[in-house]
Each structure stands twice: as C-alpha cells, then as structure tokens.
Image (tube, rainbow, N blue to C red; front, side, top):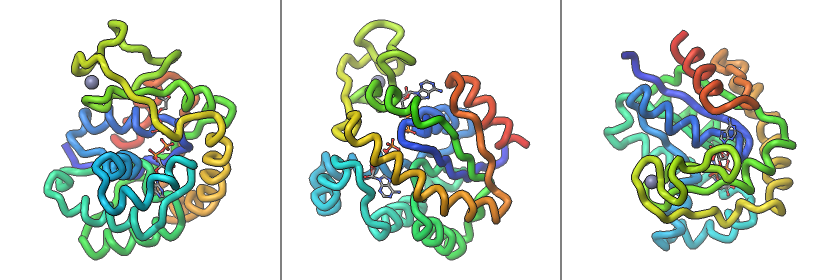
Length: 218
Ligand code: ADP
Ligand code: ADP
Ligand code: ZN
C-alpha cells in the first residue's frame, strides 16, 4: 500500500477527528491532531498547557509558533514514516506557510488536502452533542453516535466519558467565524497547489469515509 500524507480541513465539529480515526486504521498512518496535543498539554500542566488553557476554553486560536513547533517535532517521530493525517492543522495561512517550509526541510511531500464541508447550522448540534471515551479517545454523539451498549465504549469497554470545556453553544459562533475567515485564505492556498478536494461532510459518517477514500485512492 502506498503511503498517505494528507491534511484534513474542516470546521469545528465537521468530523475531522471521526474520519481521521477511521483513516489511520484503514491506511496504517497516524493522526496528528493539534487540538488533541494541546488538550494533552493542558491536562499534563506543561508550560505550553498553562499558556493555552484560557485561550482554548474561550474558543480562540493559540499562537502559530506553538502549533508549528509542536507539529515539526511530532513529524520527526518515526511512526510518521508510513504517512500521517494532519487534523486541525494548518488553520492559518502563516501555519500553512510554516508547514510548507518545514516539509521541504524534512523532505516530505504531501499527497492530498481534503476539506470536509458541512453547513454551519448543523455544526452547533454536532459540537454540543459531542463526547469522547476518556480512556481511548473514541468519539461519540448524543444523537448521531451513541455507544452500542449504553455507557460502555465500543472500542475499549470503558464507562467514563468526557466533554470538552469549549464545546458549548456560546463559543461555536465565534469558532465558526474564525474558521471561515482563515479558510478563505487557506483554501485558495491549497487550491493553487492542485492538492485540494472538497468532500460533502453533510452525510452519514460512513458515506463521508467512502468519499475521502475515493480521493486518496485515486
Ligand atoms: P475542533 O474539533 O473544534 O475543530 P480542535 O480539537 O481541532 O477543535 O481544536 C481545539 C482548540 O485547540 C481550538 O479551538 C484552538 O484553541 C486550539 N487549536 C487546535 N489546533 C490549532 C491550530 N492549528 N492553531 C491554533 N489553535 C489551534
Ligand atoms: P472535528 O474533529 O472536526 O471537530 P468530530 O469528528 O469530533 O469533529 O465530530 C463532531 C461530532 O459530530 C462528534 O460527536 C461526532 O460523533 C459527530 N459526527 C462526526 N461526523 C458526523 C456525521 N457525518 N454525521 C453526524 N455526526 C457526525
Ligand atoms: Zn474507549
């Protein structure tokens, strides 16, 4: 199987994490989520974690320097050699440019940039209904994806779940505004490289996966 190196773009709640988890199994590649890395830093109470907690809780973006540095270090870990999915990065034009020069330096070539597109009005429900297994990180939803057995994670059987501090209706509007503002710069950037494909994210999870796989396998 050929290696895959891709960027998954999409609005908050658009299904990036959900799809990344399926794709990492399907293609034996790793999911690199800046959101997950930052949340882990907050929980661990690292210097970066202390710096970003309030910014994240308010639904604002953390500095480009922090996320670019995190991704640059993460790409050097050997599990990335078979391929990777960038989930939630880059989010600004400066991050895209930073990624571009870092990949050139590391001799890595991207295969694909996929934008999962979902109408704004669906994202409030997606975000406010989201919860996650606190042990393995499997994602769930109050309406769209409940565990098969109530209160038991499908993947690991754990009975504890968490909800993100930023996943409430008040932050959604500004997170979406920020996304659209940044995407209006990022999408043309990747369109000009010929790597960008837009996928309809307003369909069930399996149908979205099928569309993304079609892009990656073509
Ligand atoms: P979502 O699931 O809403 O898209 P993420 O888990 O990707 O959210 O990100 C959660 C938060 O982490 C963001 O609101 C932001 O504060 C921070 N964050 C994650 N990735 C980035 C990034 N590439 N640039 C700046 N901030 C980021
Ligand atoms: P992102 O990583 O882009 O912020 P998630 O993958 O966490 O988004 O998805 C947000 C929420 O919506 C989760 O609760 C997830 O279970 C649910 N979800 C993801 N994809 C779909 C879909 N195609 N249809 C309905 N709900 C979905
Ligand atoms: Zn689990």
